Image (tube, rainbow, N blue to C red; front, side, top):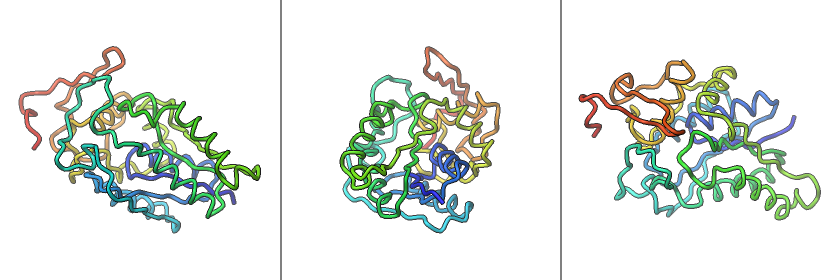
Length: 246
């Protein structure tokens, strides 16, 4: 049976990506990363998702001293969504370069022919390592810098979500029977999602556009948030009772 390494964060996109790899007929080898992230709840969720699929080959890799981001430095606050076109402070320096490098090495060890990663360049926060040009360049590096690549076997990086809207990702997840109720997307990492960070807003927008109810709980009733499209961005209109989330 063909094998694939899947990057599994415990979030909506990576869980959908895992479901796609399984549907494509791969024996999956999911991996997660403990890199000191504020939202450590996602690791718990990733473990639950692996159990849901009865996956035995699930591993967590630990990476120390990853700073420079609101997701890894507790002295930097996680901002609410603003819709800016700038790369936000939640960007973790070179995260997907690091993650994919681990994944490539692991793929060679387990003789996997593919690596699935749930990057998206449509409804996303503007991270440079989620774009198609980054994946294309990394693919060339893998072909040139690995034994499998030099010997002509190769390891293909598969990005089934990269050109999908968040609504389309959610619909795909539902079609594949992915356990979205086990996922966590909030950057603040609470038991209930905050509803106002970049990741929460994009998730809420996707479920609203898909016409599907989000199965996870939010700190406040998410129906109090009005989300509309404006020049490709998201506008948030909060009711008075949603002035504070701390």
